[in-house]
Image (cartoon, rainbow over all chains, first blue to last red; front, side, top):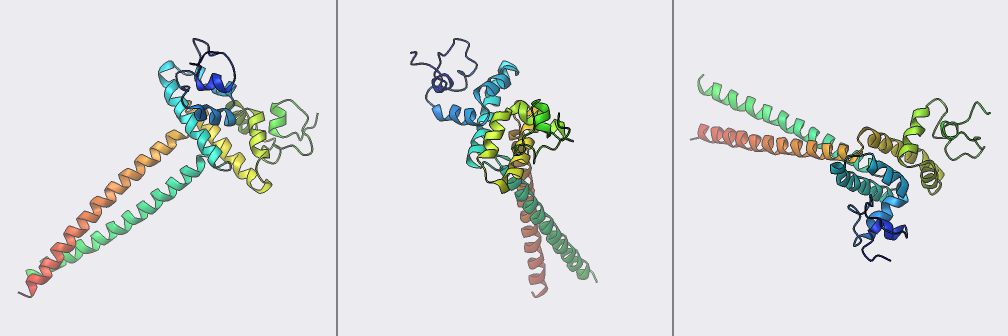
Length: 121
Length: 121
């Protein structure tokens, strides 16, 4: 057994080949990372998805797949779509607050200009 | 062949059983919906994820899985994590704009109260 097998090969109980598609993104010291992704997508699908991408984008793809898989494990009904809904609600609230503040400033500025004008009457 | 096979069973070229796990969420008139989810998760994983959920949450889970799968097909590197980043940037921008507007209103109110005070001097 190779003690330097990546987390994916360790999980899949297989030899870690030199050109292992998982090894750069699933280091042996973080076994949970692969377990999550395997549970949601399956090793074959993740390997296929990474292989279809150019080398320099694979690390980011592995990270985003891990994030989505973790979200799906935490929330099996909504996954990270739940986060998207939360953020959309937060944007709506902030935009409403902004509109309210902008209305307030318009009122304050009108009052200010009226006060100035009355100074000259 | 049963012409009323659901989109999943049609895609998988199998008989659509009476208690088909996919059939309520993948109607025969929308074949693309299943194709997308199958490409990203695989039919077995989706079936497993749906089966682990109570009946009344399965429709929402199927929708969110479809949404995530479509995002991953459209953006193979970031999937719907790309949307989350975009929304977070939008929140940040709106919050900055809100802070700026709140500062402006504070200035306007100070000026207004100074003008009122000078009226009494």
